[in-house]
Amino acid sequence: MRLTKATLQAIKYACLHYHYSKAIPVNPIGYNVYNDNGEWCGVILYGTGANKHIGTQYNLPMGGGTGIDKGSPQWKTRTHQPSRSNVN
View: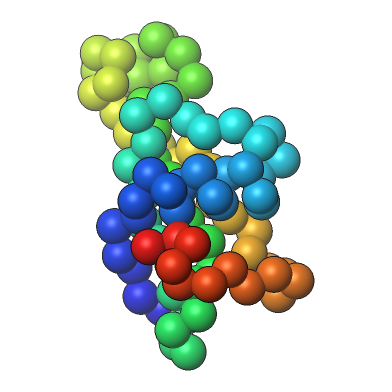
């Protein structure tokens, strides 16, 4: 497995095509996931969370904590293989 920094284009593609919400999170930080054959498998996204109180139990301000927002299910199913030009 190999990770590379995802572009906004790759993040949009994965969210709109593979995630059930069909929504793109605010201020996403993402990484492309490639398998050992170099095939793009999706993205892993990190975001600031769902609400302003998400980090309060750890005394963190809004934006002070980051968690996984979305992941593409592409690595589970092989039904579609976007070209590299679509996601990089």
